[in-house]
Length: 270
Image (cartoon, rainbow, N blue to C red; front, side, top):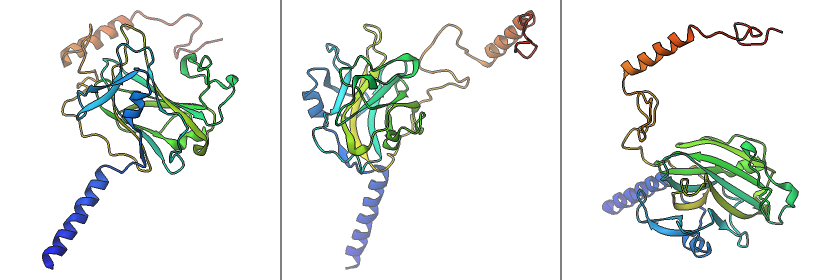
């Protein structure tokens, strides 16, 4: 009897530990179904960082967006608090991930969204109601977290999560009960140089903030705040070089002056 109690208690502890480290999803999107319905836009590929295969854009495809759901099937959007995408950016530059939420009933063409930099969805045949976008770093697998609370349209800047760059939300308020089609888009796409080499291992809805991926084994930024995985002319190699650069800037600045109509603080005198 005592042995049974010990084993039962150990099972409970083990189960609790597993649940804490990886929260259960309310709904997991089927990548198999997404691939089958993509008309060749995305395919399975052996992953460089995830166990097994991951979904990635086809090199022969012409579309660089992924339809998570057409809106035909009922999903637990109302119960969920976060949309999570486990993603890897294999490009040597940052990528921007858009998540376009469409209203179930649709929106008129004049309801297009104007994003930062003047990018607009006006040319889309059907308009998304609201579009959060988040930057992701190169060569760093990330659990991209989209808080569904931002669908209320009350905030421009999104909550921050580990490994994510700045996120913004543009568009019009959308009740989770009215969510229809949902599409993931990736930028930049400027072929042949800027092809989105993106791996997606899973996409799911959850009511709990997911635990971040394990700590990276190597440093991505050096002691001078520079990206470790890339070299360029003028990249600082050591402290002496940094000091020399600062002294050179001080020397150049001695002969620099503001225009006559500026004050010494850099403002207009008039």
